[in-house]
Length: 362
Length: 263
Image (cartoon, rainbow over all chains, first blue to last red; front, side, top):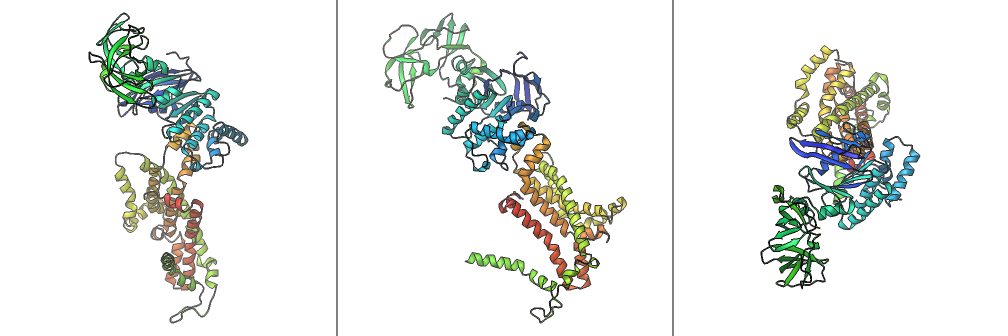
């Protein structure tokens, strides 16, 4: 990890009563980047955020922002703004004074406080709400004010702790769009904590996946979907197809037959995965490679897709998600095409057998 | 209809004891079997302003002592209430019980010891001494009221304010105090009234040199001047009424009640 990164977390460690909450976390974030801290509840992602904000003191490790070491710097001097799940607008202040709060603490003149707060309210489409009290706002409006209040002080880093999880599903995508638009306008470096992988994928440039206090994999959403480092990561991103295989150069020896894969770094016994939406189900063997003869054992219609369970004669089970227009019957003999570039393998690891605490599927 | 009748009855029962008091204060003699006095006078009311009755002096001393005790009780009660309301630590239950002791144990039982200590410190018969003993009953009430206020307080607001650039002192003034204000007013009201009405502790520790309104009232009651006593009694109720009206107006009735939390 280089010290030149705009924001850098090094060897960050924190325990509560000897139970590690954050365990040796290293993370570099570029200026203007949107990064998600993703993981099941209790994995230490919120603790990491509080360590960054300076609300908690780390047991070990260092945090650097723009070449400045932040250890021992109180939260009010870090230039890091935090938006919490509940919004926590100050109930005794008007919306306008809530937004102007950070400016007032910095001794900005009243006239400037007012003009900047109003401009910020404009950006979150709440101009005209400045004289209302927080109790008069809806949940979505309150969260937008909280966002405006954090951004008006022009922080170097914006931290969002589950900002959308208290909102209705319909409001959530609007808020996601707003957060993305505001980030693109302000170019603020953003770290967002979430347990919802769908949200993390939409919002972030990179996702840092965290399990039990440790970072498991930090990559772009595409890589996390297509090339997970192990079964736990794959399962967290909705992976359902896992089988043992023997890798020999470009050939994977599966129970149901041999397939070719373009991308498998390991040789010998490996764990193979393929995303269910990448499997094609065809009725006639048009091509000869990477085809497995299978029987349809179960179909589920979800509205946007048909989820098929397929079984090879050798007993291998596959999940394939096909377009709803493709109608197949239970018991029908078809062929599963596993594209060579969709197969991904990793070595067997002891952690691969442990179940994910809270696996979410999209 | 019945609701209004019950309300009227409650007000009447509460107000009735004051009626003879008011009549006495403006009567020139009021004896059985007169239903109302035959002669009226404002002499008692003008007497309370004269220096010889010591009413004004007592009023001012009471006010100073009550304000000082309330202020000190707040300074002790705010951090104590925060610790009791927000933190978990071993022996918390014991400390709460310990705080209640001055209310549970009669001041008569402890007065000898207190007086002995205050004499040694040279504080007996001084205003400071009286303020100190008034803290005995006021601090427990203040700490307990504020602990339940803090128990319902979300410290997330303080965290939020810090990350927005507020120093700990700014957080206290701009966020914490405004948010717990209803509870603070209720606690202060309690402390003020306890100090204002305190007689026994003042009587002993003040040693006759600190002369508060309850003592003026007591002396007048012993002197047998019923009209003057009635006027002093009414005077002694006024600050409490003003404080109550002011606070309920400033906070709204709901806030004043809500500030009590689960006391």
